[in-house]
Every structure is written in C-alpha cells, then in structure tokens.
Image 1 (cartoon, rainbow, N blue to C red):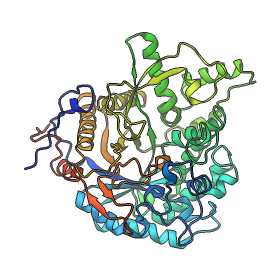
Image 2 (cartoon, helix red, strand yellow):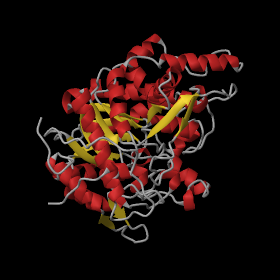
Image 3 (tube, helix red, strand yellow):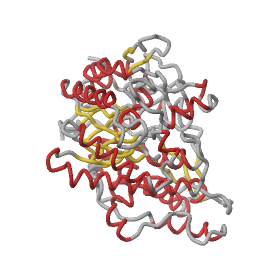
Image 4 (tube, one colour):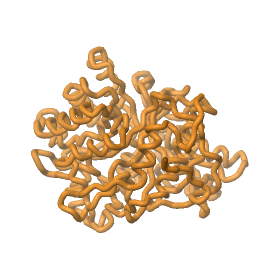
Length: 492
C-alpha cells in the first residue's frame, strides 16, 4: 500500500498533526475547471466573443507570453477524455462552468446557439453515464463582449439579461443538474475587472465601478435564485448557491487594532457578498468606512450603493448552499498612514496586508501554503452566517513546471483537507464536500500557462493536448477510496 503521510513543516510554518478521522461516507470529493480556462474552440460552432477573448486578442501584453484561451486544453473536443480522467479519479462530482457566449453569442436570449446547447448536454450526459454529479457554475468571469459593450456588470441593465440566461440554463439542463452556482468569485469579477482592472474587461474604476458591479451581481444572483425556486425547483428538485472566495486574514499581533483589522478585511472580502445573502444588507463596517471616506473626499453620499428595504428582503436567504474558494492566508494590521484620497476595495478597508517571508509560496504570486487558515475561515463563516451548508469549491496548488512528481501539491491538498476535517470535527462546521482545483493544467488567466494547478499534466505543445497523470492523482484516488488522509484512520 502506498504511504501518503507527509511532513507539512517542510511547506509552511509547522502545522498541527494531520487529522486522522475518516470523512463521512457521503462526503463528496470532486475536481473543478472553468470554461474559458479549458475549452478552447473560442470561435467555433457559433460561439460568440467574450471579454477574455477580446482583451487577450487586442492586447497581447495583458497576459504572460501573450497566452490566451483560443485552444488551451481543447476540452471542447476532448470532453469525453476529461470525463474518463474524472472516472479514473473516482470523484463524486465535477465542477465546471457554462460559457455564456457559447450558449448566447450576443449575450441575449434572442439568439440561442444550438451547437453550444448540444455541447453542454453531451458533457452532462457523459458525466451522468459515469455516475459523476455535475456542479454547474453559470458565470465564471467570461461575460459576452456584446454585453460589456452595453455597460457590463456596473450597468443595472445586466440584471435582467443575466436572469434570462440563468433561466435558459435551468430550462435546458436542470433535469440533469442538481447543484447550480450562480457566480464564481464575484469579488474577482468586480474588484479585478472593474476596480483595479487587472482582469477582463480591464476597467479601472476603483471604489465606484467595482461597487456597482457588486450591487448588480447580488441582485442578479437573487433573481436567478427566485426564478429557480418559483419556476423549476418543484420539478427539478435541485439547489442553487453562490461561490465566494477569501483568504484567511490573520492578525499580525494580539492587539485589539489588528484583531479589528482582521474582522474588517473578512467583511470587505467575504462579507461584501455573503452578508446580504445570509444576514441582509452589506456589513456595517463596510457601510460606515465607505460613507465616512466618501464624504471626506467630497462626495455627497457613500460610493457604496444602498439597497432598498425591499431589495434587502429579496436578496436575503437566496442560497441553498455556499461554495467556498480558499487557497491562502495573509497577515493583516491596521494601516498607520491612511491614504485619505484612495478609493476602492484595498483603500476603503484601511487594512494593511502582507505575507510572511517564512511561508512557502506557490507559482501564483497570491498563493502561499498556510493550511491552518482553512479551519479558521470555515469556523468564521459558521459563526457569521448561522452555519450554512458549505462545500469547498476550489482549493489547490500551483507550480511552474507541471512536474509529474508533485509532492508539494500532495502535501498542500493533504494539509488543507485536514483543516476541513478539523473544522467539521472540532467546530461543527457543516461542510459536505471538497473540490480540488484543478483537474487539468490550464490557462491561469493573465498568468497564462506559467501557473500549473492540474492533477493531470497537459502538453500544450502537442496537437491533442496530451494529458498525463501526476503523482497527486494516486494520492487523491486513495483519499477518495479510504475517506482518510493518513495511513490509518479512526471512525467517529
């Protein structure tokens, strides 16, 4: 029998012993991808242009080496092979996203691309035939360019357009899909897409466009949930959730100021989207910070839009489960020298953020190996939102070379899964599954093909994009088979 006990102190500051208690028999283990990162076929069979197609075609310097998603893993043509890899892993579920522009080339409901419909029906059918549960993300960052030309997410017009798209997905695929996620990481869509502009569509509107984006995403999410609840749930009997991402924000010291900075950062990252859905309205600390800073900057009111009482009620309670993406922790402290004129997510919170030099880093500049942060974040979510039903929808490790002997990835996944199990056993957190990112090496957005997250290596120089199992495949297979992270586990 293979031995999978690894010493985590080689990867990070020394971490507590790995959890030796079995995961429940019905705990779900899966793998994840997204459409733009793996599908390719960017303009085939009637697919429309999305914001990433446009950005990376018109500005070749936006991504490393000018890489783009034109072909990437070519999963549009190789989806059966990908499902075979999932079957080999013996996962319970596969999280993937639907490309909005592949279904609706101009983003609107008036033009449905039947080839796109057929592709996703075939993929879902192949998953079902192999006893793999589809977890479908409706929006994973790839807005049709035509809708961006109409104003994108900061424009309130998009709410009804997204609702039409979500209703179409439910109607076309809902009999075979029981788990829907309306949005993946809306913070990245809004902050990086319309705040700092590092992601598509590359708009820089810090503290204004990014908050209108968030406001409209939350309304669109709620509308999609109500559409499913009223029109489809009685027959399809599925669930609709949302995926929110965050680091764990570790106070740099035990001072009350740094403790408060940690809580503030959690509210500005996770609470911005979760609080309206689970508790009603934006977090109070966000409202007070942004209003105070806005008025001091000469605005007549807060740059953060306000929900009406009716909207607060409409949004509250619109998640049957919560997807959590978590990779890293950061150190935080209260900023000593405030930029009074600064606007946007990373100024309005008034929190200083950095990584410890002692923490091991992955290939991605934002990824550090801090498995102890997983339990802390899950516990915080439990306490903030009345212990919602949760699934870890992304967690994984990046390297530069895609090595097949990926011991660092194994240790990373093992440590973070131990944190998940600790949260379940010690804190009573209601987690029903875990999803590794990613099934395949793929296009890591602006980092191109330089950051490799896959359990399976992809040869991007081969015409067929040959897939090869890494060592982590055997590790993950063993965890799924035994429900255990170490050589011997105990039942509880």
